[in-house]
Image (cartoon, rainbow, N blue to C red; front, side, top):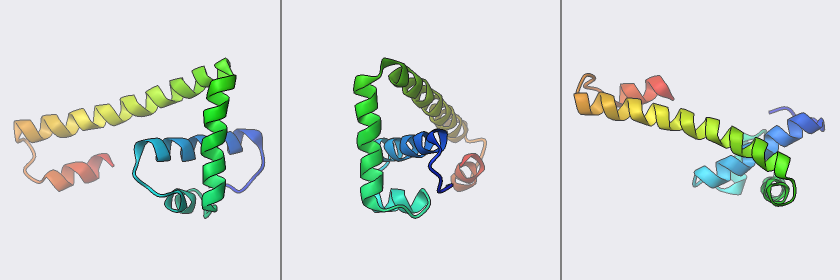
Length: 102
């Protein structure tokens, strides 16, 4: 990720940290490494910032919720494809299906 201080980039990076923490079992250090080699404290700050924004700014919360919905819809769509392919036994190699949609 870009190491910049532009608000749009910082906010996107903070959301990345927030969603990684919420939906994965990754450590703060791992998330920071994925997000451009950032320190775990920076990741924790990002998560707290997004949480606080959601509590205090209704417009930001709506925006974040919309982004989260898009992410979850995309994940659920891919899960559905995996399940359908597996149940229908159309594709014998399950790992190749997972690789195709990752």
